[in-house]
Length: 360
Image 1 (cartoon, rainbow, N blue to C red):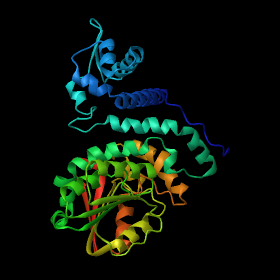
Image 2: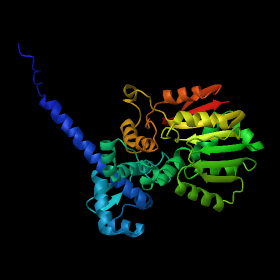
Image 3: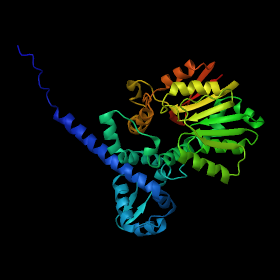
Image 4: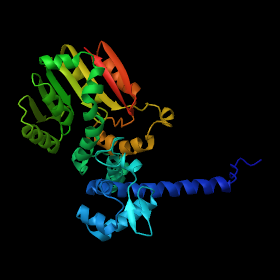
């Protein structure tokens, strides 16, 4: 009796259906890159402001080359994003599409996230080397990353900060009204912290981030806003060890790609005064792959993890926990750090993220 494995029978119908699915993935991926181009150039905003228009009129309004705009529009039409009238050779962005593709989009600007697809493509050669060597990368290796993250924060955190997010930490807004010390750990360009500094002039705000370009941007934005109660400092939070300095600490999507997330959380616990509060936002997926099969944009998030968060952590000598390190992992680390209470929240309008309120 032969022990050789039998050759599996090929189900041609299933194979053809899968090939069609792969073709759709490839098509959608290229459309996503062109969405990023359109977002960066403001073309969706131009289309939203115009009646049905020719490519020449759209290019003129956008102050761009007509030939390139025409080819970009062809991608958008065949991708089902822009409507086209062949009789008049005019293009239109339907209002239902405007609702999620412009800078004032009521449903949030999803074109912002198309930039991540383009960024992964730019990083491909570096990533190939990482796969071969197991080494990591640095934040500075990623072009325009802080711009992308600032746009994300500008529509997911900043607009909700006072009405939705701060109320999760009951009583903290009233304390900031009276005047307390606040830290944003991994502040990026500092958009959320600047808004809080404007709203609560009696409180004192500090932002730390590893990247010099982000801190330079934040300091300039604070200067233009005329804020005297805020300061930003370039600082590697590895080994951070301030004691009992702050009443309230925040971190927005900043912990999972640190060199040692557990050590950072412990140090933030130590940096809080008695009665202090830590508000932590991170990606809300599970630590278990099988629990994420229906999680919103799970493939996108794992791709971001593979291309950015994992290599950035490994590049610092970290564990490389990745974007989808899991809310269970985050909650366990908060509890291990010694917080007396840890409350988890998922906001109805934002199922992709998880929020923790931890109290000393």
